[in-house]
Structure formats: C-alpha cells, structure tokens
Length: 402
Ligand code: NDP
Image (cartoon, rainbow, N blue to C red; front, side, top):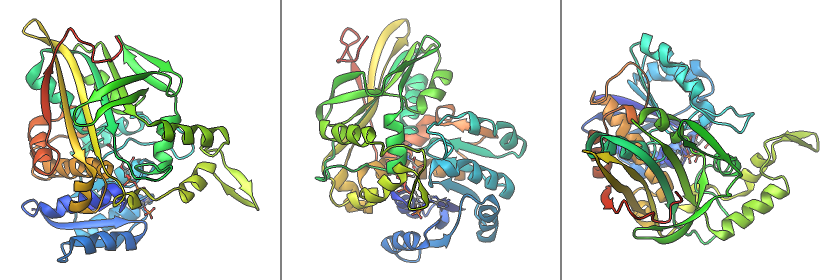
C-alpha cells in the first residue's frame, strides 16, 4: 500500500484526488496539499469519509515540501500545481527520496517559454538516487503520448506521420473564459506555432494554419496548428518519424476575444506599474476572468482528443485514429469538474497508480511514451476515459494538409 501526496488543489488536482481516493487497493492514504488549504478542504469534503487529508504548502519551497513528505510518510508525489513549481517539487522529491509525477513541463515565470530541457537535466540526479520521475502524465501531453506508444508497440513497425487533434466542443455560455489556468492557457495559444518535419522545427505565425477536421461524435470543427509540449519528446522517441503536428479547436468568438485582449496588451507578461504596484497584465486578466473551476456546472458538450497515425506494418501502409470522447456534464456529475480537468486528472492518478504498484519501474526522468502504454491505458479506460482505435483509408487526407 502507498501514501500519495498530491500538490495543487485546482481543477486537475481535484479530479486526481477523487480518482486516487477511489483507488483504495493501492493508496491507503491520500494527502492533498496546496497554497490555499481551504481549497483542499473543499475537495476533501466532496469526497467525504475522512478519506483525504489536507495540508497548506508553498511548493516553491523545496524544504517545506520535503518536510511534509517525510512528516506524512508519503512514498509518491503527484505535482498538479503550476508548471512554475516543477523544478522546486523535483528538488523536494530528490531530498525526500520519493518518485515524482507531473502533467506539464517546466516554464520559468518570467519568460513565456516551455521546454523539457530543464527537467531532462535532472536525469542523472534521479538516476543516481534510484528514483523515477514521470513527466507530462495528463491527456496532452500524457494519453496522446501513450496512444503513440500503443501504436508503436502494437500497430506499426515504423510510424511516419502523427497529427494530434484536440477538440473541446464544450459550451459554458459565457462570452470568454479559459478551460484551465488562464495564464498558462493564453501563453500557450498566443505563442508562435511550430511542428517537426524531417529532423527540423518549422515555425508558423500564431494560429495561421487552419484545417476543418471531422471529429467523431462532435462534428467538423476549425482546428489550428499549435506547438504543444509532447511534440518535443515524441519526435525523439518514435521510430522512423517523418512529421509530427498538433492541432487544437477554437471557436470564432474565442479567437475574437483573444485578439482584442492581445491587441490592447492584456496578455503581456511584462510588468507595468499602476498606483505604485507592479503587475503583469496577464495576471490581472487572470484575476478578472472566470475561475476555470467555476465552469464545471456550466459546461455542456463533448471533448474529443486523439491521434491520427500513419506508417508501415509488415511492409504495408496503414493509418489509424486513436481517440477518446469525454462528456462535460458526465464529468461534473461524477467529480464536480468539467472534462478538461477530468481528462488530465484521470491519467495523472493512473500514472501514480502505475508507479505506486511498480508496474512502471525505472531510475531517471521519463516521458510517458518511454513507459509501457498497455497497463496505463487499461487503467485510464477503467477510471473513466476509454479509447477507440479506428483504421482509416491511407488514400484519404481527412482534411489534414499534406
Ligand atoms: P489551477 O490553476 O486550477 O490549479 C493550480 C493549483 O496549484 C491551485 O490550487 C494553486 O493554488 C496551486 N498552486 C499554485 N502555486 C502553488 C504553490 N507555490 N504551492 C502550492 N500550490 C500552488 O490549474 P489546473 O488544475 O487547471 O492545472 C494544474 C496543472 O495541470 C498545470 O500545471 C497545468 O498546466 C496542467 N494541465 C495539464 C494538461 C495536460 O493535458 N497535460 C491539461 C490541463 C492542465 P491557489 O488555489 O492558492 O492559487
């Protein structure tokens, strides 16, 4: 049996805590710690039965985190705070001698830039300590990496082309809101696009390449090419890969709001001084936008996230589409959260289950696709996110540009 410490009582932390609490066969104690303890207590109260214990924690302080790990005797840490905390929590895990899992790669607060290099640099430290760190165990990154790993293991000898397609067709009825942390979300979308082809990164203007893809159970949606963090590890870890791209759907209303906010400077991370107080405009924007957690009861509709993968099997061309469809209202009925947090929190809890049970073992820092996809995807399906594998016609483009 394991004791897990979950850090971060936001949308994702809430779902992962519900799911770890359901895994009584693996986790005999579930702790939730965050900057605001009241948020932990609220989630613990929803779960009930004294199943979840809570604590206040500043995860930017590695000593404080390591002390808490030791005090409660946790043997695994699931970091669901913000990407800014990643390195601090990794340091704390090394100090306390426990494995580490997260769902988003490190991003320095002062630069709108994320990449794995900072966390990959911990490879030797984790390996020498005999500990495992699992990076990007949400849906994308996370499950999408595992759809590729599953395809590599069972469906292909060589994967040549991957298109990751992320569609949120949910509607919360509000004029503008982001589905998860607004600061992280807006920084990701307003950055220049990028995809990988034949060993090179190709940059594109933000949201300048669009395709209309027909998502099963959702319909045709405008989808824009974006850079997304799983591209960085998948282009290294998939055998024979020639190209990998990422697409995300945005409605016209959302993009109009975003354009205006950007044009007036509200998405900037450069601090400005107002009445003697320094503030980043995007931080102010975050404070006036709806809290993503408040969207849960309002959001109706479905998400569809998956991968179209093309390559060779036994010398023949094959194309498969592997995807999950998740229903916002059903997530809310189950764990009081919308599908974006649900699709991230369920895999995070399942990754913790893989590490806690020793199904995944290793020393060092791992991206998801370097681990066994089958037991993980079985657990993810069982805990709420089943997937479909559909064979596609290799002669058809399905509107994905050549
Ligand atoms: P939220 O903003 O809803 O929650 C973040 C939580 O972390 C808050 O409770 C916050 O506390 C807490 N926190 C922030 N700083 C600290 C700190 N220094 N010490 C302790 N706690 C802290 O974010 P989400 O739940 O939406 O997202 C959580 C993570 O999941 C993010 O890293 C996000 O990028 C990632 N994510 C990954 C996805 C994937 O598919 N891979 C998809 C969606 C999100 P407070 O309440 O006090 O502010």
